[in-house]
Amino acid sequence: MQADLVVRGADGRLVLMVEVKRYRQKSPSWVAQFRQNLLAHGDQPNVPYFLFAFLDHFYLWCDAESIPSLREPDYIINAESILQPYFDRANISKDQVAGQSLVLIVSTWLATLIYANPEPSDLDESQSWILESGLYSAIQGGKIEHEVLVA
Image 1 (spheres, rainbow, N blue to C red):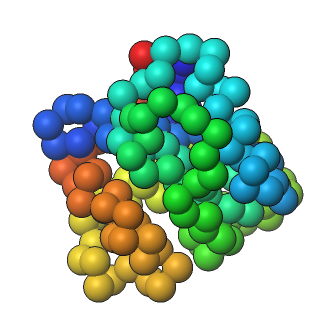
Image 2: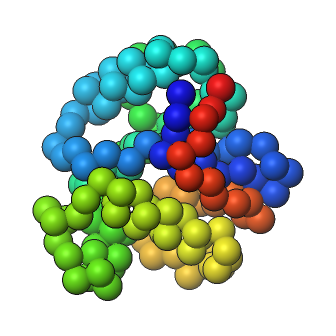
Image 3: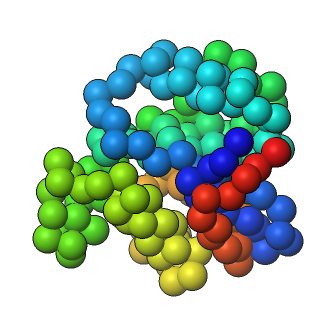
């Protein structure tokens, strides 16, 4: 399958696969079914973290390398506080953002976490899940790749 974004850790291994969609107001069970269907159409990528980045929420699965069972996400994050500063800088609303622009915004947010290397104490409360899940440590020293074929 082709992922919108992947992050490789400092050792070059895949640590995060990201699918970015302009969807909104989806239930955790709908998102779990969507993930299962998406992963069923290709080889299961060996990646510890899987993230859906939707306009209103991020959905993160940890220990995602297990068989793609119908499992709800480990974390459901309100994406507004994460994405809104990027919408503001681009002078657009979330209703106006195109699909590829949303991918670029999510990529920029990830790049800030990886390359700006903020201290964990500098992350605001809305991003505590990044530390709690272990994702922050996993992506440090890594790199982002766009539209990657993952198997």
